Amino acid sequence: MGTLIFNYGRNEVRTFLLSNALYWLREFHADGLRVDAVASMLYLDYSKKPGDWVPNQYGGRENLAAVDFLRRFNELVHREPGAMSIAEESTAWPGVSRPVYVNGLGFTMKWNMGWMHDMLDYFSKDPIHRRLSSPEHHVQHAVRVHGKLRAAGFAR
Image (cartoon, rainbow, N blue to C red):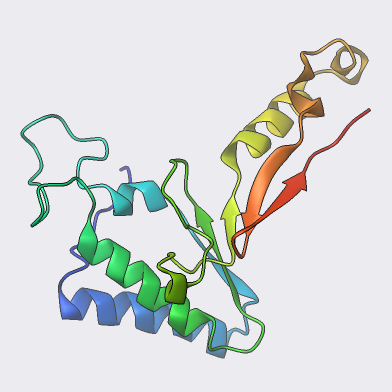
């Protein structure tokens, strides 16, 4: 089926998505929410062929309505005591985990897909062959948490 693309500029869409997020946090006491495929939200041309998308009002490829939505989403999530938000975002979009008040998207953390894929590949190998595998699992991958660089990784 693929990733669904919502029209984040429509009030009823924004209200539906924000209400659902708050419902999970308040009613089920979730510690946080992970937003999948953030890149597909941020870019109007994501996975689209030339001519299948319309530039924003400034002629760019950024989905300005989605940026506003994500900032509002994170403002609301962070009003809930102890709640965090995690962005699964695979591009170089600046400020994913920077607070909204400094022009960031406001996520608590950015999910590091490279680290996850390296570890899944490493653990899929037979244990006897892991020590002979390429060194990608030794590299510490950087993760941004509240805009500050953190490291995650394993070494033998």
